[in-house]
Figure (cartoon, rainbow, N blue to C red):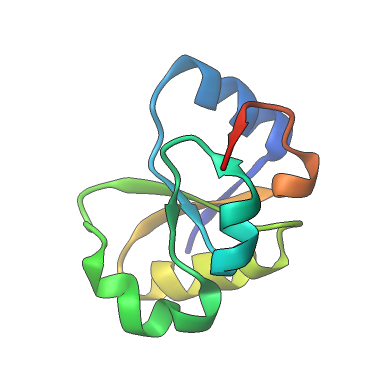
Length: 99
């Protein structure tokens, strides 16, 4: 089981405290612009890379609109991770974006 948060609530939390953000978009999408300090774990290769994550951390999972992050959140939760799906994704994010 995983949690979900709307993009506006996530944006407010992200401004106040450092969050562990997993961006599951593809490498080229991530390179074009992402949340500062986000880590890129593309959904297409997540089954091969998730073991690099720390089960002691809480992760916020984001993609472009929320579909891939939902799939990634389901997968990671099934592996024992504490994850929160960010609904709305980068297409609705109004915070600082870096490239």
